Image 1 (cartoon, rainbow, N blue to C red):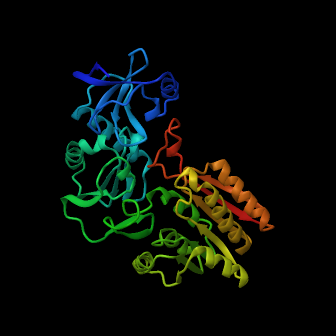
Image 2: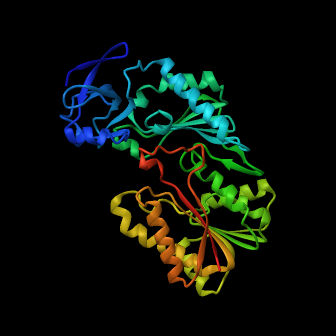
Image 3: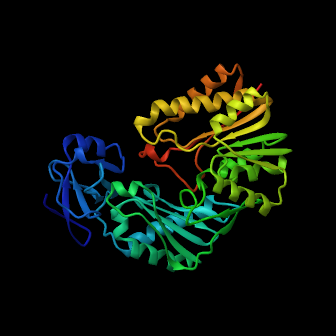
Length: 396
């Protein structure tokens, strides 16, 4: 390791192996530890100059000494990484959200690498900001990032949701704390005509599954008759499906989540929801045995395949719930089925759903292929950002 001059001052240099150089040329913003010419002795989160095996400059990256992902590329140019750099990237993220986010006051403001902030997500819930840092590079720069957000957005509050277990892989502590302003126990947000309570401190992810927002809005157009919302969590899908449905059955294994779903129903003035605390696999099996039928079924399970080692069980689980759903659909019924497992590709998910329909002896046509909401843009060079799949199908 030597020093390379980038921007205003020399940076520690990290060289790639020939194999690492071939990987870097794909444009993927992560470089793995076994692609380095030698693991450097550097502090976690250090900004480094990345070079090829001959020492030629390739870019700047944040270094991690703990994770298998050793480098997270920040730039491919030698520009200074200063306050003006971060402000320009934030301005670009804000301008993009102004173009694509509509009819809601809850959205993702910064989506990690896709917005040029490696390892950082920032969400806005009715003016209350929530940040989650997953890498020591941005962790070390949090004071200037939070100051920038406060200055540019004047939020009602700013909370750090540093409770994602992936932080442990980077040697970062787990904590949740509000560092600016006053955060109420719950925040009321709006998606179209639907209102939802958000628990910023205790809800999943940063409080709500914002990536499914546009899919919830799309699914609402197909709702009618008897609707089943499986893995319903706090009822975000159910609240969108309810206005056109005669009755909505929401199934969720978490009692606290069901309690919030009940309050969301009250908030929206819905009195035709049945809230069922049950294991979804068991519920679906028993519903088939009882001969029940639904006109629309939403399946939004948690990630069954969080790692490649989970794939075998995940494939079985996804097929099981989709097969049962096809068995439960009434003629001309609609299935809205999702997978948020990156380790399951869209072609694989389509094949699982196809096989599930075949096993259920149902003919299904694909009406819509969807992904994450537009405020979660994906990098083509970062397949991990193409994680969410949502299919809308109609059966004969």
